Image 1 (cartoon, protein in one colour):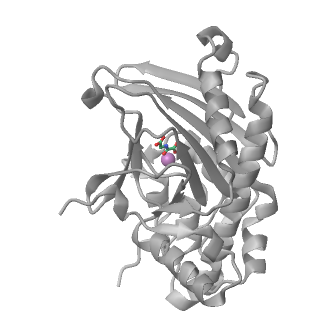
Image 2 (cartoon, helix red, strand yellow):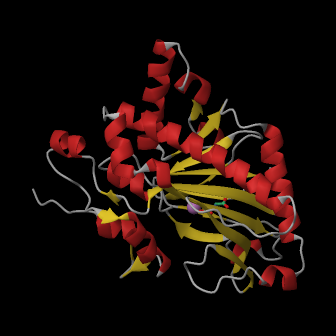
Length: 310
Ligand code: OGA
Ligand code: NI
């Protein structure tokens, strides 16, 4: 039977952070299972005002609507620029995007006028949510909260906001919005304008997923797979385009600090009897990713895996 989008696990943040300890433990358990079995889930009752989500979409739409000449001011010059606009509406790539480094330093274009304030507020909310999720996952893995903060240095977590605009494409089957990849951080939080287009790899097939209005679509990223010694899965995904509707997605990638050296948590290595991944400084990990995501056909995450011969 073909899987449908409805089968993505749903995590209720109000239960996860609430006072009812039975319901809380169940939510923590569900989160762990979602991170393990799917690597993707839908967040509800997350407390982020719908108005803020709508303003974020509206402000970014205004940015994309500016003239190409105006947007060119923000064009990426190097892979590590803190503000990077780019558009690929040629060949097989079909995407206009703006990536901003927003934490611990905040970078944002000055126009449209509403953008800075809304990006600042929205990304702060996403950071708070990502941190709650990291803490809950750590709890589900029986790690100490303090150890987690000290290892991942979450106070100076590195956060990027990527806004994608996928215009209607005359030949959608011959183009791709965003090629297959995994995300580099801990948790990625995505909202969109109601037009579906995200696909995730599951059992060797591409599965289309969607998220209801006002919910947030979350995925586990590479650093969490490494830190959890493989108990959370950073799953390959891509964005496809369609012939009729414009799609906008706003993607907050929440990482540890660039100063953190991330490897499998010591308590898990002890329990599991072995580390399944090497450790690497997160700043270096990102620099490596920016050079291109594959070397000899392998993703960086695959290159981090330690093979054990029984
Ligand atoms: C991303 C991403 C998917 C989408 O920006 O990392 O996976 O649906 N985007 O735009
Ligand atoms: Ni992604």
